[in-house]
Image 1 (cartoon, rainbow over the protein chains, first blue to last red):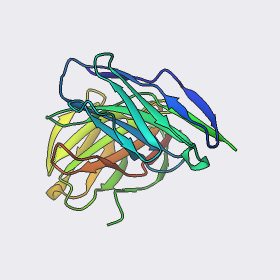
Image 2 (tube, each protein chain N blue to C red; image 1 turned 30 degrees about the vertical axis):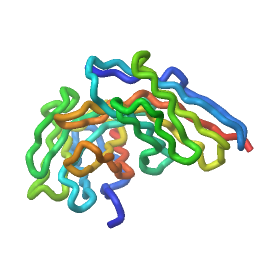
Image 3 (cartoon, each protein chain N blue to C red; image 1 turned 120 degrees about the vertical axis):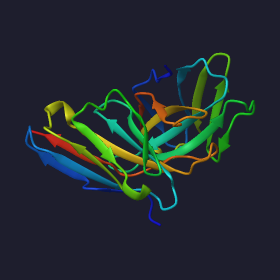
Length: 115
Length: 114
């Protein structure tokens, strides 16, 4: 079974600084997708960024970028120029290709942004 | 379309009572998922529908849990004889039936069993 591990229960960053959230996963599949989701307090989970395993290029979405290391099964999220609105729980998630395509989540990292 | 809608947002029930939650997915999304999220944990998969067919159930879904999606539109999740361990956030998500799509989540129903 696939597993996702987020080893940082909490992280903090100063406004305008950069922070990196870690994620590792375990799978025997070669084709899959990886995601970072953001869950603000009392609000719905939204997609931050996604990465297809077959793509070597790391995904980037504005201030958010990933460092995808397929051989190491590592998928970290870098948030640049952190903003107060970035404060939230961040979940790393894995999705196999085919079948139900259900998401397997890590336990999450709570990000605090200090003004 | 305002996204995935879940009702109620909060539910407090006494142990042993039955509860039912509703999820309205984004229209035209034929995939619908239920997840459970307990405090300090990430969401865990419960069950999956493609249109009206329930195609996968997690072993977390005990026989006290039942989910339906009549006519492939909204879905309901019923928990019978609730236990304190059922207290959690129940999340619904929907997506298109395509590899290259993302799942959109509702705000969840927070269940508290007292």
